[in-house]
Amino acid sequence: MPESLRLERLTLAIADLPPYLAGVRLVHLSDFHCDGVRLSPRLLARAIALTNELQPDLVVLTGDYVTEEPEPIAVLATALQGVRSRAGTYAVLGNHDLLYPRSRACIAGALQGAGVQVLWNEVAYPLGPGLAVVGLADYWSPQFAPAGVMGTVPLRVPRLVLAHNPDSADALTPWRVDLQVSGHSHGGQVVIPGLGPVVGLVKRGRTWLPQGVARAVPLLWQDWFDVVKDWRRSAGLHTVGNNRLYINRGLGTYWPGRWFCPPEVTLLCLESR
Ligand SMILES: [Fe+2]
Image (cartoon, rainbow, N blue to C red; front, side, top):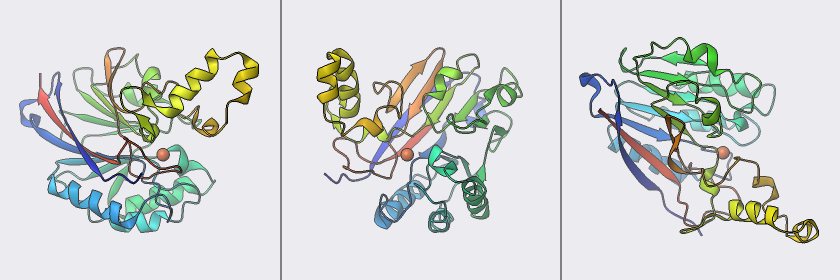
């Protein structure tokens, strides 16, 4: 079932956020999968137009710009040049942006050329010293190493962490993370309202069945099973230790489509606490 783009709005109180940043507006986009198949040009154009209508102070992107070969990033990078915000666009890469040896350089280079700042275990202060924006290497890459960069941010400074894979939130509990934004799960794409993503229900159901019966369960969802550790944490706002995690359902769509899981543009408004 094709579903139309949905705007999600959240207001979050952030400790130590300086008064000059109260009410700051962030737009979060994720999981484009620009490959000629999984993201329609119309949806991409609508997502960018909606982003601009929201007049954000900052735009953040959490990876999976392409699906396999990196070259389609040229199309997406051109489109992203149309994104407008006061302090720019900051991004991290996802697992699909690292599939080939040339992928990382190709994708990061195209994004940088379009004015998007790509963070790879780096911190930036696009809104001034009162809010750190930390961008991590993808959790599934050997370069995922939060310790060095998290340790460089002064303790009293609130942090927004960009990390493609929401499972990385468990590894970040030793540090203060006021808000982590992630994607990767696509929200499970096929969701039964009130019960959650079908992939999670099938995965959990298989563990309850006797092995012989479990083997007979159709393997339709097998490729999805381990995308995230626990599908109950695959979209929306969650608490992980002392930290908060927001998971965006993404824009691109894999077979067999989306059901009660529309592609998403997120507006995050930060308030002082
Ligand atoms: Fe993805």
